[in-house]
Image (cartoon, rainbow, N blue to C red; front, top):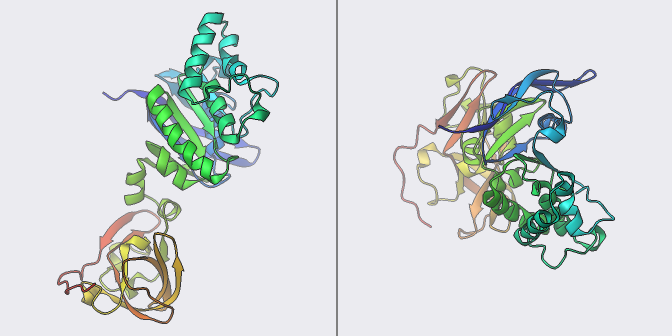
Length: 356
């Protein structure tokens, strides 16, 4: 049986007239790395602070290993916390910063030395033990903050936008490092981010929070391939939003009354004569713009009076604005206020030979 480490039941929290979270419930398995993802102001940090004991929910329960902790103070919850701005003690060395929690626990000098030394090696900070925070790079400071948080061996590690203050190149390196560290130490970890690439790359599971509600929880691939709400479908990955589904070949707008459609660019093939199979299912289009994205071309194509963007391989002949093209939409997501469904293009029956 799967061991549930964290259980939240119907968490609601308001600050004055503003409702920060609305009936949020979730379960987290022991040892998992969870990305709390969503737009700014959506309620992510409020959830994190309620788990940490820094805020008390107006209603609902928080359980750690089946024990209700609503009234338990932060220092008794067994939590490590890493803040966006590191919050290191400026006058303390790397060694002393990492040792701080162990000193508070009144560990022996030998225990502290052994634990801190092991963490310095684990986090790649060897040779920096005596340096002060201002003598470190941003990435090194974040590693010190991480080591300090896990030194007292917490049950739960909470990271609030841990890479926000670090430049893009170092941030990408730290994502891989964080994933490896969490796998090695085995601590249940929740990190807040508004960067979907970061969440998808690092997290075992993602919880998408929007306007105080939990929109969806699942693995990155589950959420990407099977979004359960229009918000999730448009927030994760890139997408085209289509209002007039009936204008597209091969799709049935009556399947969901008053539905809109979301089409991911990778669901679309764009090509000239001889490049597109299932020609009877394809639309006629005109290329409006072409953008080089490094690994492929991004095309802005006019179809049925609207605009779609799609990708095209660099291995295929380049297209230019004004080119007439065939546009094959393989599938789309249908959504209305109460339901959602994936729909395949029903006219894809007799492929034509593809000439590349």
